[in-house]
Image (cartoon, rainbow, N blue to C red):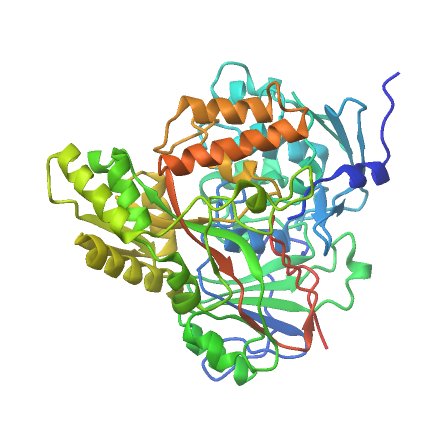
Amino acid sequence: MNLKKTLAASLAIALLAGCGSSSGGSAAATSASTTDGTTSADDSTVVVAINADLNTMDHHVATDGGSFIMQSMCIGGLAALDSDAQAIPDLAESWDISDDGLVYTFHIRDGVNWSNGTPVTANDFVYGWKRLDDPDLASEYAFILETIGVKNAGPAYRGEVSMDELGVEATDDKTFVVTLEQPCGFLLGLMAFPSFFPLNQEFFEAHKDSYAQSIDDLLFCGPYVFSNWEANTEYTFTKNPDYWDAANCTDDVNEVVFRFVTEAQSAALAYQQGDIDVVTLTGDLVDQYSGEAGFTQRLQGYAWRLNLNMTADEKFQNVNFKKALSMAIDRELIASDVLKDGSIAAEGFIPKEFAFGPDGKDYRETAGNLLSEDVAEAQAALELAKQELGTDDLSFDLLYETDSEAPEKVCVNLQAMWKENLGIEVNLVPKTKKERLALMNDLDYDVGLTRWGPDYADPQTYLDIFKSDTTGYNGYYFNDEYDALLNKGETGEDAADPEARWQDMIDAEKLLISEFGVIPIYQNGGAMLINPDVTGIEFHNAGVDSYRHIKKA
């Protein structure tokens, strides 16, 4: 007999460490206004300064943390994350897991409705997951269905089987069943990740091309509704009285406003004036405001790196050239003297204090430091590269985003280091984050500064980025040995052996770094000013930071 585990047991095996009106239209904003027309922070409103603009509200298209945060404000998943990053019920009131770990049955709770009054059903999850896997959409997150092992996710994406054979089913309106090809210990935590959120088929097909382009083209089922969308300025979320758990959210603030402020100094001044409640600090501002009430600092899971587009130019395939670029970088200087926000120099692709192995040790402690600075060795490698490439002209473009100040500061310093240490001319290419993402997705760049925020607390969330046999892969790094190591640990002979799987991850990272498939730079710090009266913000090193239950005294 195939017994089912209870909800409590389900929560115990989760390994993740890591708002609506009666219509789909825009709700009226109720926040106070300043003389410049923007909302100000009062007792019922929390204003959060963001340094990257909203990219998209389409949760199957989004790839950036800021968009995911706003989506999770007003839409919900089967599960949510608590303050310890553990999976707890949200739109699903409970779930069962088969003894072999291959079948998850989620029970949608009663009283969960979209903002147009339509009930949220299991069919909304089936439709949403199928859209995520649709090759016509070509979502950059289509791979994550394979990551958790959903049956036929890869074959359906490639057109080898019908999408109807994807391992998701609504046995009735309240029962959503997921069938896997292999057990996945971190699946429950990922049910709080926006890529897995539901989508109402009737509403989506009625709006189709305009879906998620405005508030009127969205439906909500989370603790807040999206009530005011001022592109490039600010985004307001108002408490949802129809949220299923509204009775337990009475202490949460009425409004959360995400205000796009490109200059951290301006945001910090607004904080001092009481107009903003949450600000991220970088550079000299960290020292300037370290004594301010509400100053806090932490290490984040975001890992910043350089992608070298090997499809753009032959020199980016040359190991000696890439070695020269990497070893000429003073990562400690960038972290401690340029950023000053608690960031640390990268020691590999996988960050510190993020994932822990079967022996309980931090991954980075076991894998070791794979990066070093040695200008003399960098110069020697450069001379070899010039001989191999038959040219002395090794100049290139360096792409970075301008939505916040830190990437520009980092790239200006990289430019200077490569000029001083290697004599290489580097042309800086500043773009908005949205433009930068599009260019890198289209492989239309030379070298780009980018980052990855982990979706779950396992090195696989990083390493799968460069696994070329993954569904929807559109990268530049192709290595059969790398793919084989990850396949062995994820679905192959080592998948059920935690120690062997962990070693596969370590070996894959070492191979990637040895070939300079990426050049890691630093791990993000989190220097912030947070109004002492504000509580309830939940920061997760893996997954999406939550502002869903924010409070203000």
